[in-house]
Length: 154
Image 1 (cartoon, helix red, strand yellow):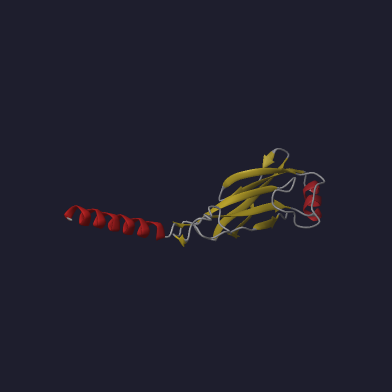
Image 2 (image 1 turned 90 degrees about the horizontal axis):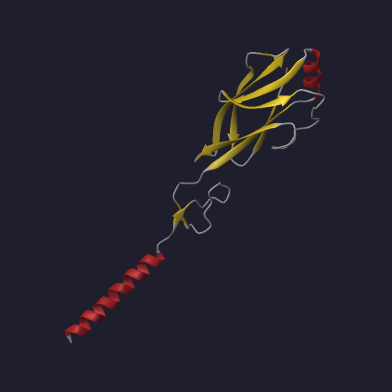
């Protein structure tokens, strides 16, 4: 009888543990717009991460001004880090290009667990092989899952 009671208690305890464990909610990122969304997560644990994009471009007046002043290249900086060079030619846009468009510089920034982040943008121009001081220094707020644009002016 004692053996039967022991086995019965063991079965009940094992079942209770298994039932309790199987009902616990999996934690993770539950925001489907984040870069690390976990479709299996049932409870958000605050680990969601985001990214934002920014495209640099110019219109015809900028291209004309560059031609007038013999500008041959434009170098783009974000938070004082060089991100890319745009060759100045007859290329210009009549409307805002999308992120990743040909002849643009597009940056993708890790926003961490925040849905916004302030970044500093600037650019230089190269005339006769000499790079200028930074021009157009400005702070921009990137937003999660967006493609913002930055129109260069000179």
